Image (cartoon, rainbow, N blue to C red):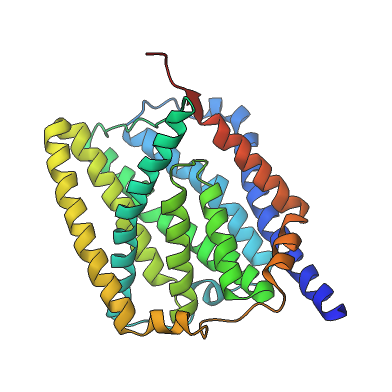
Amino acid sequence: MHWERTVRRQTRRSADIIGVTILASLAINYLLYPLMWLLPDFADGTAGGELIDIILYVIVFAIPFALGSRLSGMTVQDLMGTKRPEPGVYFMTIGLVLGWSVLAGSMGLGIEGILNQFGLTEIAEEYQLPSSPAALAIQFLGTAVIPPIVEELCYRGFYLRTAERAMGSWAAIALTSIAFWLAHYSIEIMPLAVGFGVIGGYIRERYGSLLPSMCAHFAVNTVYLLVNISFAAGGDRIGSVLSAGIYLLELLLGAVGVVLFVRRGCLKEIWNGIFGNPADVPAKQLVFAVLTSIPALLVLLLSMYFTSGNLEVLPLP
């Protein structure tokens, strides 16, 4: 019994560390609001505006994570992993994630339909087409390059390693996947974010490297950017044709990813229960330990609040 209490305390402490880091990001975000007027007033879509977005992202998100991992005593090798998977692992991961993104998109539409039945819809962020090649290059850097590096280091690096030490592999993957979804403040993105978290977390634990999930994250964000650019620059006709081609390519890569996943014995390993480190206490006790973490509970409540703020009532017909 004393041993189980120790594990619960360790689990709660891990949730505390993750929760405090996320709360620090939120606090920095709000502290920056009074200082925003000091920044140059660049128009949306300009090179200056895109560069400001990158700077704010790094300040709000990357700095708290870097400090948190440093204070926790984690090195770059702890975050990245020490192994170097063969090329097939990268191809498998990218295929699994892109294939899942297709299925998750359909699930997101289903969630949107359910929300509509209750007279609600999520506020869609309007894409801003860059005004110059330089602005487009900076937007690509701020969408497809920097976030995959920073967010993978954080969620599948710092958070996953912090949680895995206390609660085992699967529970840590589940916790960090849910945290990754909550950070997006969207109900419709839940299938994509949670599924990506599970795939990326599994690959990080199974192959001891963060690089495959970084590449997969890059692929997903690049596809998102290409589809938005095609609609904004070419109109609905060109955008629809290009997005249909990308959709088919994602399905093909997804099928290949599943075949590689099975052939490499990953499915058999999971089915036989020999993947990763098992939890030392029952799942109910782990959930209780996480939900009794004050920082984690605050993150959950704030995420629910911000997510609800992204909902609006459908106009009357």
